[in-house]
Length: 313
Image (tube, rainbow, N blue to C red):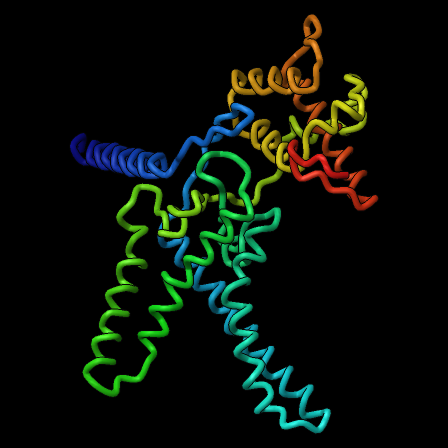
């Protein structure tokens, strides 16, 4: 009887150990995806890189959306010209090449050069593009990584879709298959799952799920919190939208030591002395709230300060 009662307890312990082992393996696997990016402000942000499957899924979503946009555009153009008495389908066929060109080359650029730094496919999977040096994602980097996609994907796809008529075209198609395999499989053979375009542009795709700000950022009204520190317009104009986003990340996920270091850097930048007994976290929260309110107010009047290097008003 004692042996019968002991058996379930042993099985329960084994199951608990097995679950613990699986949990540890999963934690170790997730830890391998974490990269520390140090921003120009000195903040070390632990970011999780996107997996090859996530990037492939995002690309397939975007590619499908591109195809849908092309088809809709062709039908709309044909309908418009047909209603005006022209030969709609022939005109649509001529203009479709222009539509395909712009969608193929500027679809990714249009979305990634924006504030979200992500296409609809990337946003659906919680991904975004970032600079590998931790700095601001520049337009040059976005252009470089996306123009390389023409060589990585679309050119070899054109070779694959060509009609095989003789031995030469068969060899060209085989070259397209090999070319596609090299570029498609390239992210599987490097630690950060980078495309060739990412290597050239100095970019990386990170996992950035939609999250709400913690209560320590949003618990107090930005204006009331900032009022206790009384920041001047000149102090707030030292930074722009990019630095606001960096400061938000610092408040979300950095350590207290990093927050103190960033607070000191901001004080040096705006020429403000630390008061006796002043808390660094309270200072950062107040400056974040005041800077956000300042930038939002400026944007209402058509003014947009991208970062601390933007001096145009």
